[in-house]
Amino acid sequence: MKITINGRLKEFSSAENLKTVIGQFSGGHTHVIAEVNGTVVKRPSWEQTAMREGDAIELVNLVGGG
Amino acid sequence: MHSIQNTIQDTPFELGGKTFTSRFLLGTGKFRSKTELSATIEASGTQIVTVALRRIDLEHHADNIVEYIPQDVTLLVNTSGARNAQEAVRIARLAQEGGYGNWIKIEVINDSKYLLPDNAETIKAAEILVKEGFVVLPYIAPDLYTARELVKAGAAAVMPLGSFIGSNQGLKAKDFIQVLINEIELPIIVDAGIGAPSQAAEAMEMGADAVLVNTAVATAENPASLAAAFNLAVVAGRLGYLSKLPKKKAIADASSPLTGFLYENSKDQDTITKQ
Image (cartoon, rainbow over all chains, first blue to last red; front, side, top):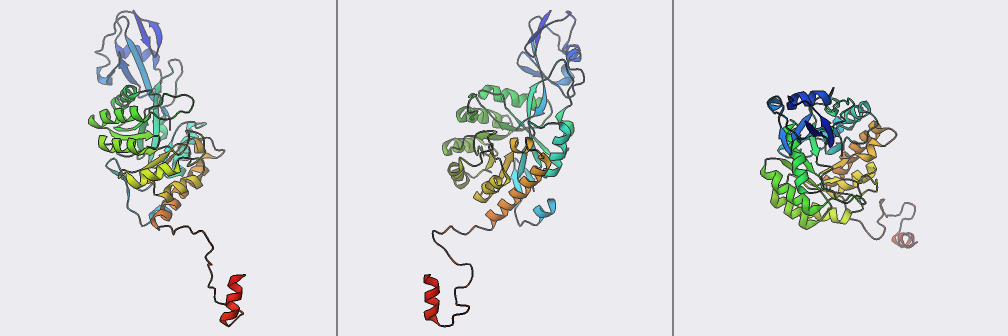
């Protein structure tokens, strides 16, 4: 199953949910905000959010800015 | 620093339903390290800092900037990176869902050369985000009609640029900012281009309600020291404004009495004043 995360295509097994995907890529990042196909998914819903072929995930966080 | 602010006979700075004693907002971009940022926030006396949202680095761990910002400081997330209203709205929603509150600085830029804000798209974003319950602080190129539309939209403040962002050129747009100060009832926060404490003081003397600085402080050799200087300058400028500055005069007006010190009669006095 191919999923795009932050603009990069990644290969996953079919059993993934949003929480397990984020766990693999946000190591050490706290307070990550997730968006799936343009819609924000709140943290409590990550585990129930099944991943599908072609999904696009954005993982963002706060950084310094003016 | 706080003791100086406490001596001002001033009403609190009201913004977005909150009240503040500091009128100096600090941006958190471009700092060399997060510990330096932390020390600078402390030295600045600021109560509002701006932050941005970006994609995380999938391979490398990074500290969350929030851990370096005191909890009593209000976070103002900007929509930098947005090129139109739609993207600004998306960033605002992301920030809110992330638990970073509902304060949003709308920043829509689609010109990579001058980095000027797109006022039309900013108005559109403001209209949407106010309806969604955000406290909306739009960053604009100073323009009266834009500001009036933002008032209508329900913005919490207007943030006109002083000069090109990151340029340290000060108040190049001074006359147009003055128009906003004169005509717009909302708080006016001068943002972008402020490169020296004297420029911040000048904005405050004009009657701006607050000043936001980032690049000048973050890229200074000693950011904490400069942040403290900006804080003092903002206080000084505010005091100057509240004191109602006397008008400028085209000719000299002696500070000392013009009665003669050594010359007693009025004839001699005339001679002196005509010299």
